[in-house]
Length: 230
Image (cartoon, rainbow, N blue to C red; front, side, top):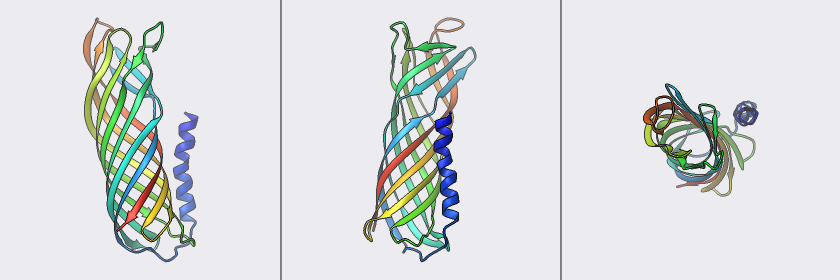
């Protein structure tokens, strides 16, 4: 909980830092494409139904993103970027708690992973600085995500299903200009996917059966990337 608070406080720090910077000359307008590699940290995910409550923890893992859009001189603060982004993640299952029982335990393994594939429409505000090299920015995005679960634990229990749901994200980062066309960036983002429903097969009150488990998914990610201005 403390680590999550610290990571998300980074966003607030970026907002305060950016708002304290005096506006300087803006960059030009144009199309761009970008790629990035992310380290994703999925929050503990609870998927619940009547009498069957599952909480899963996941390993940190690598993810990838590709985006393309248009940057234009929108206001005195700096350029605004509007882009479409595709994001894919895959985090292995580390542990599962089912109705208070922890897995892995007593030789009963945990397996599978949680994959997400999402499309976002992002809007990003850049903040001009006295430096021609460094540009902080803040962004928000909304979209749709497909969640594919292959979580397994205990003798037979599994959540092997997929669902699609509304997703949103907030981003805070720093651009580092290498050339007129090539820019590197470091970024933090928080992603939330609301109201996913996944089928679970396994034991519990009433014996072995298939139940519909509901919950939300969210994760933090730090990324490094490159942006090419056409």
